[in-house]
Image 1 (spheres, rainbow, N blue to C red):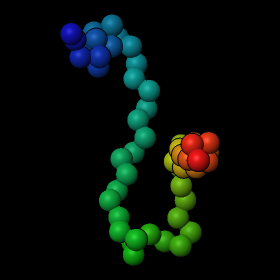
Image 2 (image 1 turned 90 degrees about the vertical axis):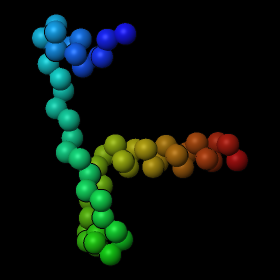
Image 3 (image 1 turned 45 degrees about the vertical axis):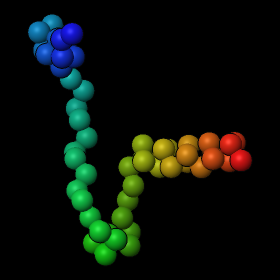
Image 4 (image 1 turned 45 degrees about the horizontal axis):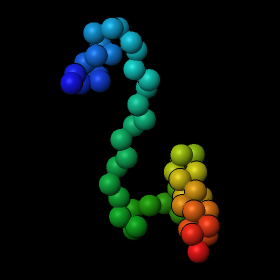
Length: 55
C-alpha cells in the first residue's frame, strides 16, 4: 500500500495548510488570558456531552 502523502504528491494534489505545532508548556508557563483554538474547545465540549450521555 502506498503512502497517502506520496500518492497525493504524485497526482499533484495540494495539501491543506497544517496548523502550527503546539509547544509543550507547564501550568506555570501559561498566561492567565491564554486562548484555546476552536477545535480544542469543540473537542472538550463533545467529551463532556458524551460523558453526560453515558452516565
